[in-house]
Every structure is written in structure tokens, then in C-alpha cells.
Length: 435
Ligand code: BGN
Image (cartoon, rainbow, N blue to C red):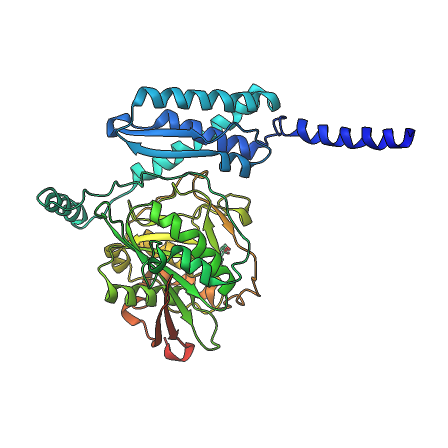
């Protein structure tokens, strides 16, 4: 009898512990505080002149046990024509709630430090933008022309420069996509999704301001590619422009030529549509925040400034690895990238030298927005480092004139138009280049 009572008491204790746990606010670490404060800053800094009101929707009352939960439970929406006052109240409500959560776990000094970090970061981003020496070459005129034309037609209005239903920090699903068919069904136009065959999309409710080609150099990373596509299609659609995803696959056994593949992607993509903006990205880099703009606002732009692999820090100031974007005329102006880096490393440093030589300055998103997860799943051995890279980097400036788009050699073996992506399967060999 007594032992039965003990068992019952034990079960009762376990159940109540679970029940109580769901009401206890979790411990927020510095990073989570940063996320929360980012929301708050975004709210404080929104520009009401543009009639853009930041709405923070509280989906349900929640207790944050970790960052994922915070992100899951808050939705940040940017939309126009909302009743500003009402939204401000809602935002205030949420802020109070967040403050309560934070207060329970952290003291004011911690919050102040994090706030300072964010302010510093924002300042940095701004300085780069202001310093940027724009070489627009009539680009602004072209945009004005599009706007004017639009004003005189009865088509849908122009898309906003920044997507109106951005989420902010995102959950990164790194689970394997075992079977591609359900994903194609979910996203593909044939079964009610938005992605057209070949991996492209254009907004229908508004006229896009830009056409973006997303270019991925590729070999033997199919699991990573599927994870990339699952994440990127919805991400890119929220940014409200025309885009198409191209994978440039290097066939055969020569060392991987990342920069050469970008050049090929560029060359083949412009045969397909009038792209004015190019995003060059590795297949294993998935952005953690959709406020990280994948267009070309003030290109050249380096987007992957805070990668988990590097502890969300820039490894060195002149890095241009990972993910970056260029306006078409800027990419032409630097003669694209070098074709001579075979194997890992150096090609991005060479690219940086070209940008500098032509007098462009890099722009970058703020550190808390340009955050990336590097997908490690099915990451087979990386390419061997290119032993010649140090030598090549000695001559970056001179080589720019005769090593790049104007000396690109390859054989296009096949174009595969899949439901979610277009493949260029190519042959590019060291023996084609005897510089
Ligand atoms: C650098 C590589 C880059 C790479 C970054 C980050 C070189 C050139 C000789 C110093 N540069 O060292 O290509 O993107 O690391 O991994 O190897």
C-alpha cells in the first residue's frame, strides 16, 4: 500500500515539474539577447516617412528557452498602410514582454552592453555605405526609366525595394531532404507553389525592380544543395524580385575552380535573361536572417560577414569569401574573377584586389543581419589547397586585364532544367589555360 502511494507521489511530482517548467522563462544567453534587441532596434528605427510600419506580431504568449523558440514565436512584418498607433501599442506590448523575460535572467548592465554592441555595429554598416564610391554608370537613370514607364501603364505597382513580409531571424532546418519530389511538389508551380521550372520566380502582385541570378559553383554536394534549395526559395520570394537559381557543376577530375565556375555561371545566365544583378554563393551557406538583401543595392556587396564556422566574426577585414553580389556592369568592369585558381583558397582574395583596384568599396550588412549557418552535412573532403595561390596573389592587379571573363574557356556539356534549379554541366580543365 505504502509503496503504491510512493509511486503515485513520484508520478505526481514528475507531472507537476513538467507543468511548472513550461511557465518558467528560460535563460537567455548573450546571443539570444542580441536577437531580441535587434527586434527592438528595428522597431525603434523604422522609417515612418516611407509609411513602412514595423509590426511585431506576438503569435502566442511564450517563454523563451532558446533562440529557436524566440524566433519561432515572433513574427516581424514590414507592411504599409497600417494604423500606426495601433501597431506602436502592439510593439510596446511585445517589448514589455521581452523585457520581462530578459529581466528575470539578466541584469541591466548585460542589456546595456548588448545594446552598445548593436549600436556600434549599425554605425559600422552605415559608415561603409556612406563611404561607398558609387560607379553607377547610368544605373540610376535606368531605374528611373522603369519607374516612369510603370507610372504610365496599368500593370501592377512596382515592388517595394525591401520585401514587405520579411521575417527577420530564421530557423535553419539542417535535416536531410531524403526525397526531392515532395519539396518540388510543395514549391513547384505545377502543384500550386511559386517556383517555375528551372528554379525561377517573379512576383505577380507587383513589378520587380531587379532581375537577380543566383550562381552556385558545385561538385558532389547534392545533400547540401537540397537543403539550400529548401531554404532559399521561400527566402528569395519574400525579397520580392525576379530571381533564378543556377548551379554550375564542374565535371571530371581537375581541381575545383570556384571562381572560374562563377564566370561560367555569369556568362551562361545572361544568355537566358536580362539579369542586372548576380549573387555568387557557396552551396553550404544558408542565411539566418531574411533582412540580408540578396539584390545589388550598392554593389559590390559582401553578404556572409558572420558565419557560424568563424564564430559569427569576420576572420579578416579584406575577406570576400562565401557570398557576395555584383551589379552586372561592376562585374564586367573588373573582368569577372580569375580563371587560374585551381583548388582551395585565394580566389576570393584576388577578387577583393580587383574591386579595390577599380576603386569600388565594399558594402556589408550589419553583423547581426549577415549571419550564416555553414551546412556540414555530407561535407566530404574539401578541395586541396592551391599551392600556386600565393604566387598568383602577387600579380592580382596586373592579371585583372587578361585573366577573367575575357579569357574564359570551357565546354558546356549539358543544361538541365529541373523543377527547382537550372544546372550548367561543364568541362573546365587546367590544360585549357597555359598562361
Ligand atoms: C584565406 C583564404 C581564402 C578563404 C579564407 C577563409 C588564401 C590565400 C593565401 C593567404 N586565402 O586564408 O581564400 O576564403 O581563408 O577560409 O588561402
